[in-house]
Image 1: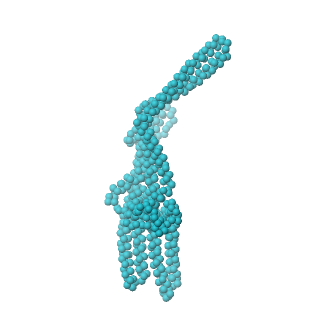
Image 2 (image 1 turned 180 degrees about the vertical axis):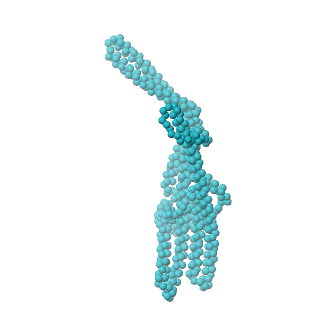
Image 3 (image 1 turned 90 degrees about the horizontal axis):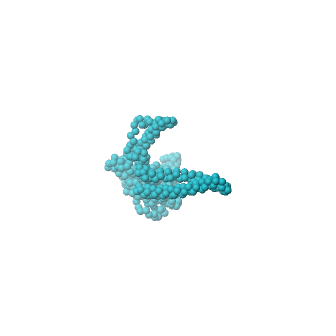
Length: 490
């Protein structure tokens, strides 16, 4: 395979069309070394630098770690709940709370009895005409107020005891406990799906960044080829200008023709200078993306490997679709909808909805003025729940099928494009062989004095032009390979 050492063009990241390649195996170990006044970096190193400079990836890493910690804590709690440890702990806590409450209620009852005796004694002294009327009256009034307060406390405690008994009964009920376990399991699974979805989003972002970097490599290679072709063309124009100058001096061509040639040559030099300035400017942009010194001359070293057509296209496409991140994300929607349905039905079966039930779900809920209205409204609510849960599952399944169909269509179009590129490569390679043969003949004729130097340079320019076309096709194949390996880019 051809090994490239090219100057990077980072600004092209925003301008170039999506191009990339995954079948290419990056060459070289991750070593940075000086080569003349340039710094050579392997593709793997450059990609890692690019990813390290992306704040969204760093933020996503932090968020994933936080969610993973939360998931681990919830999983530990779920295991204790599933083993019944949490249930037993809660039962013990409730029983302890009931014992403490009973003790407080007993204390208040004793206080109530004592206060009642005190009030009766004070009232008895008042009615007997005791001399300490005021003291007994004050004592009776205070006792009755305290008794009333204790009655209020007892009422509140009775309510609290009823609540505790209800919670204890719920914990002792196996059906209720099973529902608690199922709810906890559903919440844990949902959190796991969210974490996996974040991983997939991170994977897609990293693929996009690699796609961009590979696209820059292709763009720079194209520019370098353009510069080489332009330089060959300039050399030819220089020779032609010298020929036309001689022709002008002997009066064969006019001043206008000579000035036209000089103007064309000046424009070509301007275009070449513009390409070189863009080249240098983009190096600064790339260095900024990679976190390198802006003035550094950066060279990315990589090996280009080209794709082959799969022996069995249908099975190959099926594997690509099955492994694609966007299809896996669509599956999360199905799993989520099925989990909601199972929480309602208690099983994984589809909800069979009759036409009558679907029409009932479309009815309006009426004011509940009698038992019949209450019953009808309840039937409508049940029908709506059943329809909504089943429709959510079916929509999620249809959504995944749509993603798979779109993906398959895009992959097949891409392989058609790849097949066309193979045909173009063969055609251009034949053209290149003919151009090289013509150059060999021209050099021989020039050595024999049968043609001029201009004719040789014309043949050499033809070879450079065809070589550029061949390299363009190869770059397109390399770029398409990465998209085919990551169909979400298509």
